Length: 379
Image 1: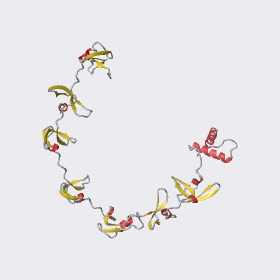
Image 2: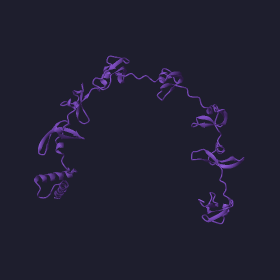
Image 3: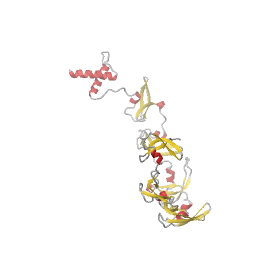
Image 4: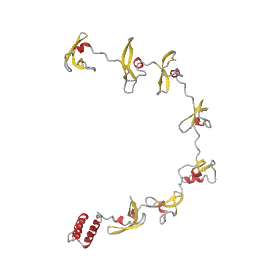
């Protein structure tokens, strides 16, 4: 009895979920539906929200392209099963698009059957193939543009001349050479364009070999050099000689003294690295603040001559990755400014005499912590 009560309760739940009714007004068919739904629910299968559309039911178990018949507005309509995003739908004949020639060529045939169809004024033969869309279509045995290219080399050998005519095609006819492709298949291909004059001048030569080439009516001598990593050689003119500023450091090392002639004058300098350190050039010696930190690290002590006297400082790096420069310590503040805040504290008003004038301000701490009378901004 408890099991029957449970089934009855489940039947009521199913009817409510599926839009049915458990009242006495239901028909025998409705009661049967409710009982079936209740039994399926016990098996973990819920009711279907709605039945598939008649057009979908009409193609149940059929293949794409099969004839079908679906009811619509109490009338039976004949059509064809077509693939609509993975679902076969019975489409009326008046809505069925005309079959393309490859599909029509396989009408009533099976996969792998021989077939043929017309493409323009050419007849193409192939085999019926089931496409991913479940449509049987005639697929030519060979692409149309390839056949004339292969036919032009029938009975010929690689290197023989050939002629290709494209019937009914927009592609122009051409004279070519039979060229062996993958598997030794010969195809008539247009001749390769002549290489540029600099490349032709190095044909059969090795890298570094002397060569001569004429361009735009001008002949120059050069050497064969690689253009890129593919190893293509071209006849290129010799590079221009280095400027005097570089020649002056030929055979020298960085830091050596050097000189060179420039516009009738002799320029002295020091060999220094340029172009990421790969070349030395005779450049003017660095200014004393830079020279004082040569070979040193940031924070090292240094000295700079100023007005014939040596002043000590510290090597500091400018702008993060800039050169090291010897920075001298800042001069001390005027003693008058320090005295004005001797008895005060930071922020107190103060004043001191400076070159016959009274300077007013407020006491502020210097970098070393000493209180200094700082003038008012803007005065």
